[in-house]
Image (cartoon, rainbow, N blue to C red; front, side, top):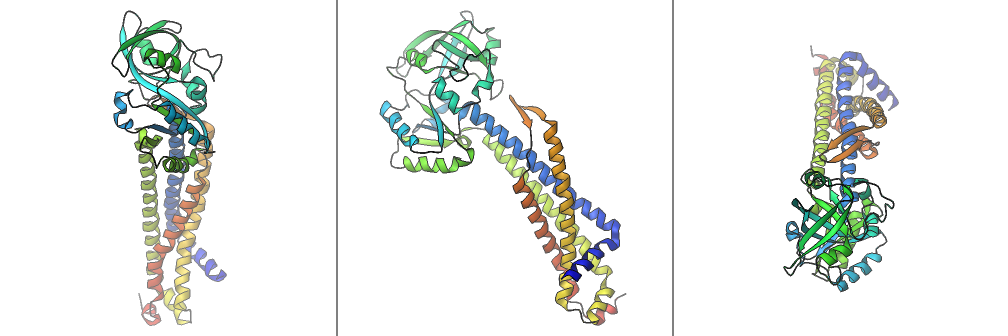
Length: 409
């Protein structure tokens, strides 16, 4: 076997220019897959992190039918105190859940006494919200004495575009007017504690207020929770916890559980990223397949007389088959090693460069890690395709009759 490997490697460099050109093409394909994979995974993970850690949570629990009407922010599809207590009890039995935050979400009108606009509000318990969406405070522009208790009763966080549109400043008083589930209208005066950046673009009008103020504004005897956001100790446990919660509530038709993917439009972008990674891998397979098939076919054609000679002196068809397969495998292996080294070097340089860019309203920094899974998968794909691409020409060479091969001109 050692002799076969030595002969195969030596044969590769009999035609150095052709071998170098083919290896360069394969290495370029490997670099494309690994570098693009590292960048795409970094982009996807940061995008998901911003969505889940600044506003949405990893998953959410609602009363049955709420998500279907979520655009209208209904207040009549809420959790009773007994239902909320039941959900909390079940969540405490799941160790993977790190924190949760009950919310009231509703629409209101906001006025500076001269101008009026509409606003979407999330009424929260600040301590629970800051633990559930830990990066929420990074969106707040203003002085915070306590990042955990970032909002006090009587205060409101107003989105950036409304601050500009209504010419508001931190410390100003605004009036909120809202309609409760019975149809009655009520108002409340609040002080602007800080400005909050939008996540969903310039059209977003999402603000925050204390849940006790919301209960007073909406004339609730006690807060009627419409949403529970859940944060996990590890995002990789999302499917496991989602399955556990579905199982816990399987006997009841009162609740519905959704992951961030089922609630956020950005999930479609994450799926597109996965499709692009698959397409790049398909391109790599095509490059390797065509390149090695072409060079091995040419190698067999140019060495028909040589094949006849070694067959005439007693070399078995199996060894001839092995010789050409090992030659194709060696081509793929050397190209992959070069491609992996260059791609990892590229990722390290890009990581050190800290590339910053804005996606919508999201400020992202591409710090691509080493995609170990992509490296091993890419190597496996190239090796497998190299063997498959080499087989047909190798099989043809091994089946040649010595007399016909020696007589070939």
